[in-house]
Amino acid sequence: MRAVLFTVMSFLVFMNSFAQVDGARPPMPPFVCADYTQGKVFIISQTGKKEWEYPAERCNDIWILPNGNLLFTTGNGVREVTRKKEVVFSYESRSEIYACQRLPNGNTFIGECNSGSLLEVSPGGRIVKKIRLLPDGVDGGHSFMRNARKLHNGNYLVAHYGLDKVCEYDSTGTLILETPIQGGPHSVIRLPNGNTLVACSDHNGEPRVVEVDTSGTIIWQLSKNELPGIELKFMAGMQCLQNGDLVLTNWLGHNQFGKAPHAFEITRDKRVVWAYRDSSVVETISSIQLFDVSGKALTGEILH
Image (cartoon, rainbow, N blue to C red):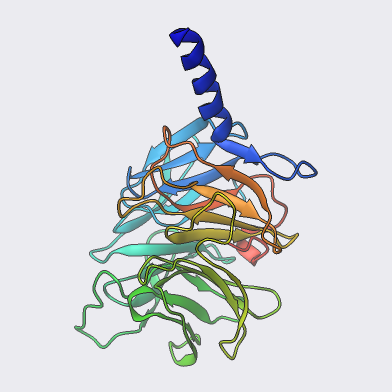
């Protein structure tokens, strides 16, 4: 009887690791993710199984490149790695690094947290552009910035995690837009309509995702307890799909391990499409990108 009960419970745990809530939609797609706590990046299959992994200490940002390689942060650096685990690009720093992005010209954008620097680095690892957001000699500390992106207009969008604001800087580093966002903004996406999507941490106990316009007005918001059976813990990485759905990562650090799904997809009317809950593989997902999504990562068609 115990063996039968164990078998049934194991099956239920397996089925609970991923869920298709809306029967009219496809099941969970395969994805790549960064596990900040374990210090690894993973490829997760459609059935929720680990297909590939690579060490990446304190990884916070990850991209699937058009050539199939993965670009990701490594605590104090950035690497591009092939599926055969060959390193083809590497940058190391004394500063904590939470943001990276491959640019259309082949250079790599990197956001250095402590130094408050926005860098563009050549394929050979040479810094070809550097913008300092802090005075020389000033250390911004662990919380100065998290996710950052270079926009198509040449500007830079930065989540100032510890300062509770999101800022847009022009190509010279001049501040052109500042939006107060309470709760520790962690990730930012500039949407095609000009609004900005922001994922917020647990700084004030109210993790959330907000869409704001250029005046800072909240156009849309997902709050802590709006989704049935899913409590937001610390909203970290995200991807906006072409149909408007959002894929969100629910970082389960700060003693929240196992208390909520790691990642899920929702519609804009807040219906859950799928949720990934398996804690036997990952511990804390900080960044995610889906496979099998149309669009080019280097030209801004992948909103991540």
